[in-house]
Structures are given as structure tokens and as C-alpha cells.
Length: 327
Image (cartoon, rainbow, N blue to C red):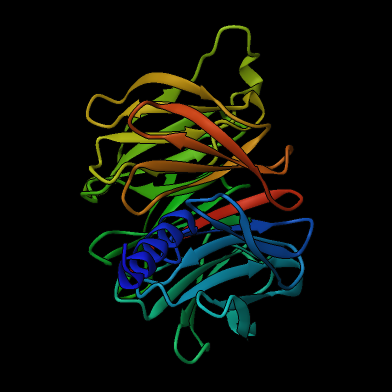
């Protein structure tokens, strides 16, 4: 073999052996450590632990994938992480007191923040960091979701046990829907026809029609050998094709698998202790589950519905978001 061929072969072997520089980045907020852990999706190794403000919880990736926005509740602000530099580059103090969960519209210019301490949803201009308006909702707002067409915003309030539907153009509340006790997350289906609202203490997921604002069905959960009060729905994620929903069930240490068309529960997946929030790999092949009490993230294969691995992160992992690779 000549020298040129040898060099080419060596280069090929080195590239095949090396971890991909283009792997997705998994971001996990660690409520107790005041950090966001960044994990390589291929090697499942920690790339970096990024210091943030106190008590990071809700996180969201911007539509251009350039920034991760983090609710840091005990510092009453949002921290903004550059997803390439992997560091906090700015903060938004205008987010209101004790931000918990947030969402961003698909245009990428409006951030909606649930302020747990003052019963408000704060709307922020992403590019200036300034508050546009504050919308009164129920007591202890938590969940936030923007519809696929950016026309509706939904907030949940824990103490009022309601889902609040907001017109994104006028910032006016259109409807207040009573759900079960301590609603946590609201998530739109892929086609925007339904909003699924998890009630942690009530133990249900309310499925709400976005045209009539009526509850179509309530999901309840049952696993043999698990006490009913441990079935506490929190995070919800839909597969890329919109056909399957995953629901994290807290102290039961399970994730429920639900058929979206029939609203029937298909199975349960055993994960770590107290699964909280969930995120999908952008290509839809893996589900990442933050387990608050075991300080790890469970990786689930979506095709087989099997838990494959667990990855240690920081203490009390809470939120999960994924940035697709740079290819």
C-alpha cells in the first residue's frame, strides 16, 4: 500500500472511531445543582455542566436552535444559554417572579412565561428581553404551551386547577377550563386540535378540544402493584408523527404510552425514580426522561418502547430539551 492510501485509510479509521462532532445535544436542568448538564446523544457522555441562576427548571430551545432559555425561579429571571458556546450569555429579569415553565412561539420572537408567585403569564420579546404584557390567570401558574399555528397559548394554574386558553394576538383569556387537582403541563397535539393537561394530584390527563374548549376525555392510569396515589402525571410528549403520547407518571417510576387517536393506554415503561419532564430526539427515535430522585436521564427507544440506558446528570433533574446536530 502506498503512503497516500495508508494516510487515507488511517484517516477513515480515526473518523469512524471518534465520537461524532455532529451529535445532538441533550440539555437537562438540575434544580438542586443550579446547572444545566449537556449530554452527547451518541456517546451519552457529559459534554459540560453549565452554571445558571438558582433553581433552574423549565427549559426550551429556540426555533433557530441557537439558544436555550432557562427559568431560574429563585433568581426571578430567565437565563439564556448559547447552544454552541455552551454558556449563559444573557439574562432576562423582566420574566416576572418565580418563573417555572415557559414556551416560545414558532416564529421565535415571543416567550411566554408562567410566574408561579403572582398569578401572571408574562409575554417577553425574545430579542430585547423586555416584557410586552402580563396576563392575569389562576393561582400558581405552571404549564405553558403555544399552539402549532401560534394562535393560542395555554397556561395551567396549580391551585385554581384550571387550563387558561389565551388568544396570542390580543393576549386576552378566551376560556378557563376546570381540570383535576394540581395541573402541571399543557401540550398541544401535533395538529393543534387538542390540548392534553396533566393533573399531578388528580392523577388524570384531561384532553381538551381547542375549538369548543370542552373536555373530550380524561385519562386515568393503572399499574398492577402500584398504589393509585403514586400515579401522578406530569410531563407529556408526542411522537413526531403525532400518533403516540408519552406521559411521565412521577412516583410510580413509569412512563405511560398512549394511542392519540383512540386515547387508549397501550403500555407502561419502567424508568428511574420520579420521572418529571420528557424530550424527543429530533429524528424521533429516542425519548429522554428526566428522573428527579435518581439524578439521571432514561433513554427510551421509541420503536421498541424499551428503556435502553440511564445517564447520570446533576441533582434533581427537572427539564429536558434537545438541540439537533449541526449537519
